Length: 113
Image (tube, rainbow, N blue to C red):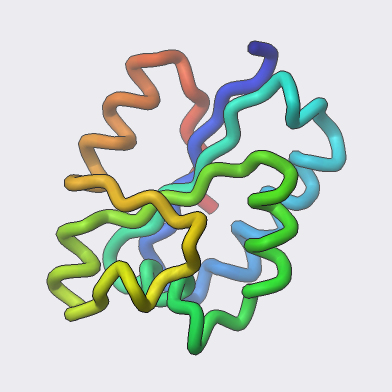
């Protein structure tokens, strides 16, 4: 695997930047030979809500290219968001910071816009 990277967003106002970063990265690499993930926690998980996401089309397109999207369950619980409210392709991880630790231990680069 050539590229292994986890992006981290925890501020809702950073969505435009992280989408641009992911889009640009996917244009420059072979996504079939890469592991690209975005973890959202804190209030950034709001960006994964089907009914209110400003970036629905971009998220769906990036997912089709192989980007894995994860949401922190602790953040979802704290904001009273159920999994039914999220796009179907969102993976829920128990603890967002643990996901970051695990991925970095696996050699993933860490990017936080």
